[in-house]
Amino acid sequence: MDSHTHVWFKGALPNDFFNNDSGYQYTPPDIKNVIKEMNEVNIDYIVIIAYPSREIWRVKEDFPINMINFVKDYADKFSIIGGIEPNKLSVEEAKYWLEKQYEAGVSGFKLHSVHSHVKPNAYREEEGGLKQLELMYEFAQDHNLPVIIHTGTSMFNKARNKYSDPIYIDDVAVDFPKLKIIMAHMGRPNYISTAFQLVRIRRNIIGEISSIPPKKLLEYIPRLEEISFKTIYGSDFGGPGVKGIAQNLKEFLSINISDKAKEDIASNNPKSLYKPLNKSK
Ligand SMILES: [Zn+2]
Image 1 (cartoon, protein in one colour):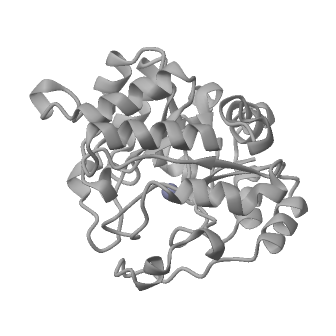
Image 2 (tube, rainbow, N blue to C red):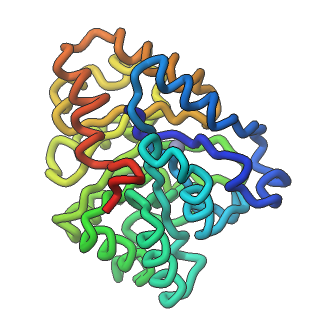
């Protein structure tokens, strides 16, 4: 499966999205073509991350709900991730949207530190005491949903890369011991060693290799095999430079690690974390 895509369909996006000034041109695909491409490489279902981002994409907390409604005729093919911008909502609004997205059937939440301009540990007293963020982690932990946290740089206008260091996730792992934390992109390119070490020492941090070109993967993470039992595959398709859902998977399956590691990373591990929409509860 593919546990990290931004396959955003036109019918789920607000008009405002098409006037964004991110500096990146995104053309929404046709849902039937996406499913055809998935079938070509035996992908059962993909995770679509529909996170809110007022600054970059002009989408808000209703985005994942609109996405769920849009794909509902193909509920076995998609898993939808929601999220909140904790620093842009009141505590009441944060509660409201977490509940609402949960009821709609999201498979987890994403915190985009770099696009929302928030440190993953900003809930801590010494980091500003952002209650709304604590609420999201607690909610996810209580409902057994994973939280994806972005790490590594982003090239979009208005992205703030000072928030991209994975070290802030260490606090989250300590303070929410039962929370499943997915560390997206393994801090690529400049924080790989921090990310790798955190996956090794923190039981509840899972490594996620999306947006690293598969051909460069072993150059970036030479000891990938060692963490293969708690690492998951994703393409980041929809993001800049990613060739395609099928092409990216083919390239991953041709890298030089064991077949067992490939199967764990691209199938067994992600399937245990994310369920498709029709099985989300
Ligand atoms: Zn992404």
